[in-house]
Image 1 (cartoon, rainbow over the protein chains, first blue to last red):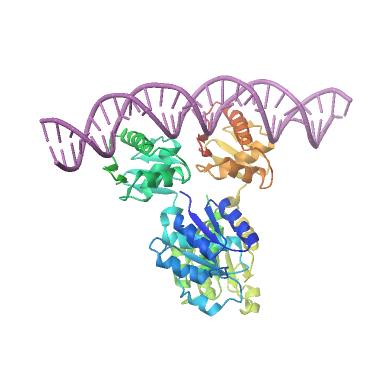
Image 2 (cartoon, rainbow over the protein chains, first blue to last red; image 1 turned 45 degrees about the vertical axis):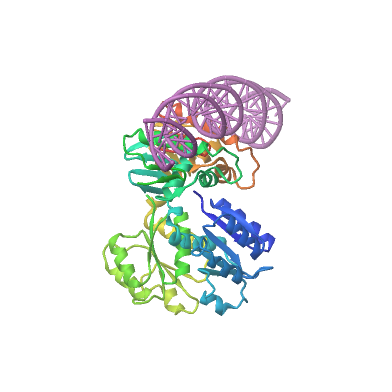
Amino acid sequence: MQPYVLIVEDEDSLATLLEYNFEKEGYEVGIARDGEEALLLAAERTPDIILMDWMLPKLSGVEACRRLRRREETQTTPIIMLTARGDETDRITGLDYGADDYIVKPFSIPELFARTRALLRRAKPSLLQDVIRQGDIEIDTKAFRVKCGDTPIHLGPTEFRLLDYFIRNPGRVFSREQLLDAVWGRDVYVEARTVDVHVGRLRKALKKNGKTDPIRTVRSAGYAFEA
Amino acid sequence: MQPYVLIVEDEDSLATLLEYNFEKEGYEVGIARDGEEALLLAAERTPDIILMDWMLPKLSGVEACRRLRRREETQTTPIIMLTARGDETDRITGLDYGADDYIVKPFSIPELFARTRALLRRAKPSLLQDVIRQGDIEIDTKAFRVKCGDTPIHLGPTEFRLLDYFIRNPGRVFSREQLLDAVWGRDVYVEARTVDVHVGRLRKALKKNGKTDPIRTVRSAGYAFEA
DNA sequence: TATCACTGTCATAAGTCTGTCATAATTACA
DNA sequence: TGTAATTATGACAGACTTATGACAGTGATA
């Protein structure tokens, strides 16, 4: 799954530039124009990392940062502050407002990428990994390959994304709605029962290999993946 | 084989930036935070080239450099010194401490690449070869020639660039958009489906030789090259 | 100017995948 | 044990993706 980066920046040209570059680099990108919008977007879908301008309309970057930290979902989400040279550099360097890193404008895009990756590696290493393993199942997200033990397994696109999501969140139970949101996308209208069918297909594909079923059905709750 | 570059730099942000850029450029990267660690890492695996900060904790760059020169394996390993403007420039320019080149901070990444390549070309030309092989396919990027096994293969310019890109990134799946960006160029407007056609032509050209199709179609994702 | 190689687009055919439904199987609980 | 609720599964039509041959336009070259 691609990392989701939330960019909070009121200056249009910079926002567009960042969006373009991050998309190119393989991130999914959300853009907020001010602090309030940032809080909204972050609530809708928890970002994997946040880039936030220091100076923002309505709600300053610092304040937005504080509020994000108060929410459980974004408590540990890495935040990089974008600051102009003059911005109270002392306090920034202290990073006492809850950001994990800061970068002074003008900055180079590769440097921003580098820092982003560094933070992601610390916070969510699985997002940057090409190969993820759980038990004897292994998926290579760059090569789009799945292996169970030594035998390669063919999955359709949806089953692949489903397994990818499961394997990154092992043990956790997801409702059908949650799976639809995460795997199909938030604005796709699909019958919830369809999840059953795809879980079934995924099971069948994985089971061919004999091993035990790695997907647990939780009655009246959903499904969970266990190694 | 990718060249292995050892980066010796104590400042985190610069180390991360360099790591990111060199990895992206296709190098394998090792990072040491001080002179002692550098000696250890270099002993573990002999680098093809070393980038070393002039000022380092524990063991200065100059001293680390000397000691590396005393070891047989690293006696001729190219070393580039990274220096701040103030650092005893005279002695550096003399390069009498055993480095092969130096570069003054702040430097541009492309410039660093250029010097790195220059030194590598002198020390280990085979690492920068123009001829790339994957399986029984061989392309000579300088001469624009392709061979499959022993039979020479004729490709049009686009197919050649496509194969060149594929062969440098074996195993990885690229979307049609990514391929357009990488092979056609960023600001060329071409239908995404055109990629299909060229992949088809490339396949046809390579298959003439009988062998199995080296390009894998990944439904709803793109194409990948496998040896 | 005629020829030639190359490119991008399109139409069509072939092949896969998807979502839904009906029905069977399983589970929880009175 | 019986019943209601929930889940598993096979079948299927339709939607979507990809492969491929044809073709016209371009520019280079003789």
